[in-house]
Length: 310
View (cartoon, rainbow, N blue to C red):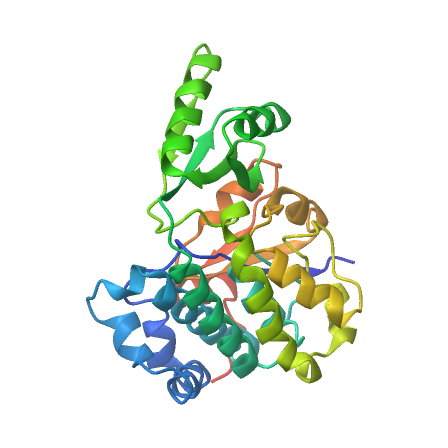
């Protein structure tokens, strides 16, 4: 028996117009945006669908992306009769995975993400992140060298990419060192457009406040659904334990996203990527797995041709 899995990209996948065609086509998707507008202090329709710069600012990006991804997922569920058995999300995308799995309601996740985005945005430092891209990443070697510069591995994305995070001067020095070390190999370092050193030790100071906040939603957690969801921080499926979930979400702020481990959990499953862009598809390809990406209604109709409920 082949199981289905839903995966959701995180910050960086956002774009103007995300999920707009879903909202125009499906009442379920529009209702997600409407519900979000009752919670947010800004118009999420406007921010997602009209030209603006705020959509790329962390405190706005995170709730907007969650809204768009859940709006898309609801349409796949209700209109295309598609159900997932397992769930994973990259960084912020883990919250969409938890909602889709039924671990907690959408409004709870949205409130969590609002707080998360605010804390991460305010945790300003002279931070930077850079994607290290090679044909075969010597992950341990890069981690060891990064440690010498006070830099952390933020994301273990695939056998061909890791992301490093830390103070800008330290990241720059690390990249220079890696360039020399791997000069005879196909080595690239791509700076990321971020406001701080996410998923690094520089986020540790906000973990206690965030944990305290999300613990207030403990009664809303259906821990029986947790074993269906992969944890970025733990690199495995959650156990049916509320405290493990809350601790894992708080520690994810400064911890490395173990996405390669998460992908291995889904290696034998039929995976659908749901989001406005398809960054995860390339990561899965590095482990020899082809997945389907749903980024708009056209790709949804192609993926689920003949299943739409009129």
